[in-house]
Length: 122
Image (cartoon, rainbow, N blue to C red; front, side, top):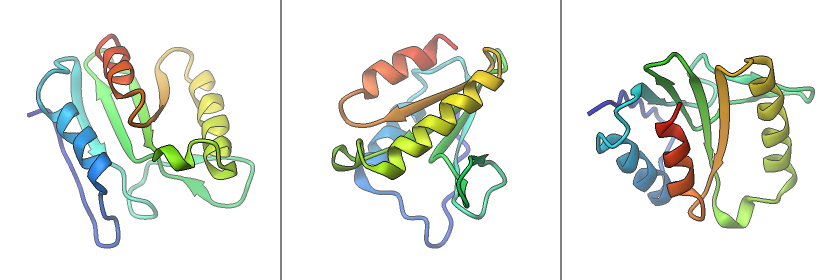
């Protein structure tokens, strides 16, 4: 198992996120050194945008090649809401600043296989 998973009080994992975590954990991603469940307002990893408040992506993975990957899980009903669009926009800017080392994926039921496939190549 490649995972280091932290779950804190008040940071409940829903069924869809749990299914995604299991897919990462099955060892199919040999290139992932480790990954963590990033707890909002608890863990130190966040992306600061131009609005007040910090964005804590749901998961952070580090690959054996040294890539840092932020993964944000969203339910289908929240893919196009203003909060999701803002988080995606600032995360893409964060990734650009990383010059090929930082990566961001908005993950949902419709693209899990695609994201895991891309993650395998990082």
